[in-house]
Length: 454
Ligand SMILES: Cc1cc2nc3c(=O)[nH]c(=O)nc-3n(C[C@H](O)[C@H](O)[C@H](O)COP(=O)(O)OP(=O)(O)OC[C@H]3O[C@@H](n4cnc5c(N)ncnc54)[C@H](O)[C@@H]3O)c2cc1C
Image 1: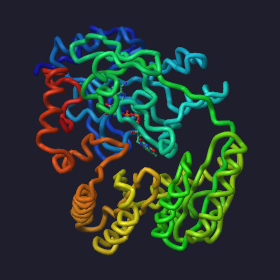
Image 2: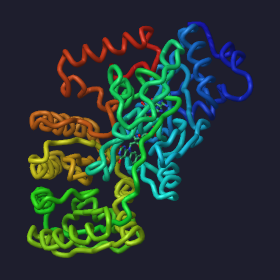
Image 3: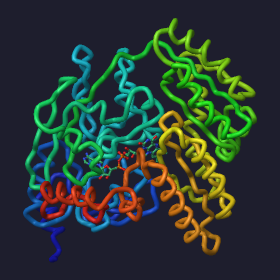
Image 4: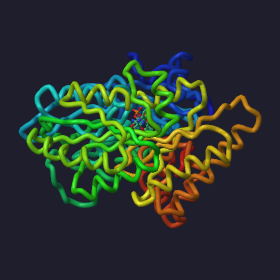
């Protein structure tokens, strides 16, 4: 193909289009290992500018890769075939927050925590809370259907997307859904675009559902003698009729790294369970009264309590630091966000220990125990001969076992390029064909985020 870049820059004067080498480098990778330079970057400032760009790209046969904040974990926004990266960071306005209708209307480049804070200031709540909330964008969260600790009680991003404006591969802008909390007109097209990893359309606006902010919360961080006893306690909590707003587990290796990394003191112990209960104060206190003896009966050796936003935040700060603490170990962290049916939780944490013994590198497990969604982190010293091969073998074993158990190879991060190798393992040939047919129907020229799993 002839060099289209000068024509592209000429077609979009005024600072939205660039081929500056530093800009290309800034838009080449995400939080995973892969990176590839685009030939140009486009910084749209409105939905209309996205329409014009996509019309130009469709006419010229140039591929487009949407990019939010570039904090994905699977290389989803990496432009593996070059082309144009559409970086949404300038479309970062919260257009409306309306408590009466319980909605917020946002541009895709808004950073998730900014919306959470803006609605919290007026007593409202946007629950989806990926650990990357301070950095990732709502457009990226929508395209990956991001989850987080509070999704146990409140659901994932999909449950908070009421309406979308999407620019399709031929440059047509469509509005799907709306600002009502229920809507059953036609197919669930909002659901089609949520989690579509930038392969079916570019999200240029989202109408999100807000709910009243629970007025009170209490966190209990319990120390257990083993990861198995902590995992076993999860079932007891549900069995007692409790639905915590978060139920997070962490293993020994993760806690050891966190002790080195965090300023907050962390009690000793082989495993931790962090349980958060939220709601009205009287109800929360009653549930905590049920929870504490239950934790002790399940083997908890020590329990720290954090009351209210401030007390809870101290415990959460430690939890949120796990990822950074593991990274600070200097080892390469291969973070797999696998999900198992909850009855397999103990088996999953045991599998982590088995992988450690068999392949000779540490495996750190932490995450959303209440959802059966555990981050299994292979901590690999890639300078060691054969380390990459052993890591791939360990991942093969992990994913095969997860699928055998009826689990899912990704609960949050998506497929992108990181999990492409296991995409055929995870879904049937018929389901892969269905993905291809949907992709062909919406993007027949294959210009949106090409080179990914479909
Ligand atoms: C420290 C850390 C912790 C994390 N914790 C969590 C967690 O708890 N839960 C979780 O779910 N994830 C987590 N992640 C992964 C990541 O943050 C999420 O996947 C997040 O949603 C990515 O958002 P982003 O804006 O960075 O998107 P990007 O990485 O820029 O893009 C992600 C995907 O979305 C597409 N995309 C982006 N914007 C648009 C748009 N406007 N229209 C169409 N497609 C678009 C891209 O093409 C790409 O396929 C974590 C990542 C890190 C680094």
